Length: 595
Image (tube, rainbow, N blue to C red; front, side, top):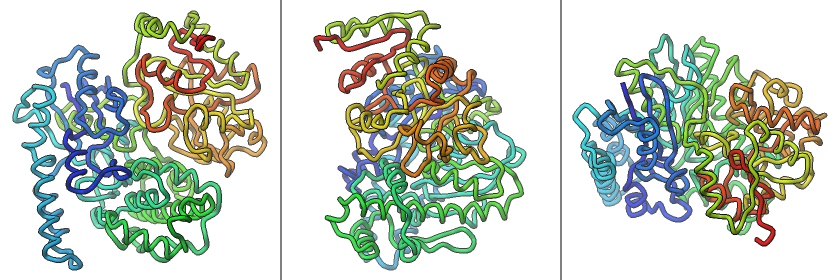
């Protein structure tokens, strides 16, 4: 049984720009962002890659033609060999009825406004959501006409759940899925028991009251790109405590005893929200550029998110006697919140996958369809699922840059030691090894590495390498067996995907200050020899040489560009920055002295 899961609508950006003004700062407020494809063969996840890594358009919503082709080509499979293509959305008649009712039942809207909204929904359905549109999109890009039984539609939140469920090893678990919006809802909770999913429908949250979308409105209010830059708000929140009482909890979100909540306006009512936020925070357009004001609003928004989701988890605790919880969806990328949710609950374990946001639904749709077809998923925990490049491909690319770089080749066994030796000094290294990792975090194969002991290393990377805001923190990668000595892990034994933030033990905060946020925490990645042998060996040697137990690990890209995929991407990025060295496979690359 061969199944391809995918996400992405080729016309989404055009339709949402034309009908819903999703342009400029709002360009990511659409369906199908983070387009990707994943291939499952006889239940085994064998390949997955995000379209942005191949077409180089960050967070692209386009039909993932390059990702689909690579997954097929890498496995020697043709379109005709695939039994099922699983699409990570299901706009059923019931969903469309609810979307229609949301418009017609809006007592605050005029008749003219309702008709205009219904017309936009009708055009969106015809262009994007309908089965005919999705089949036509597939045919246009692949040249393959899908058979009647070859296309399966998977509800978006179920795709999220299946991603987290199977990547965490399955088994009985409670779950919370929360994102901007799926087809209709923004959040569901329930449990998986004996392989059967039960959703607690009475505490589901519709998209009109989406917590993630409210956080996106705050992101926009502070001058960042919504549905993209929410992590900047999370980072800013660490610079100060939330105001007491919290204006968001007093005037914006109403939290109920059953864990549900309401917000006052739909997320698209930007002027109403700006007026409300200005009033409750005594702000204006000038204030929003002030760092202290941004910190106050960000810390209040982060606290609001933590309080609301903690209420949902309390509901889960009361409804399920299971000891483990899975958290998936875009809101699960708020790793500060994840740690607090786990530590503040009775749950013994929490899993948040490397594909928690919409990048993961291609995997989730694929494994769901595979299971439905009788091939039970056998999904490992590795994120290294994308393209890799051999010596000849790397060398051929280097030769194209021969007038700008020099290089030396080492035996594969020597590469970690060479890198560890360089990293004793204040230098920044691009690290390009093996298969591309999947998901929004660089997890050690397309990374930028540095020694965290130097006080100014964070500023150097932010300003000279990443070209991004100075307040942005960096994450440490650490050997799993050393992690408890350096960090206060709480209930966590490992954090392999950078989805949890934990306190740095006081005695290590000065030593690893470059990987320690202003509030004394770090978003850690733990690594073992079996996870990633070259990176684990590099860490072991680096620690032996320096006594420093971790390295800074940030994504190999610059602001507003996707993580690099190919040697060409890596060399182009390297030459656009002040990175000191690039380790490209077995090659140590440096700038030509004349460059």
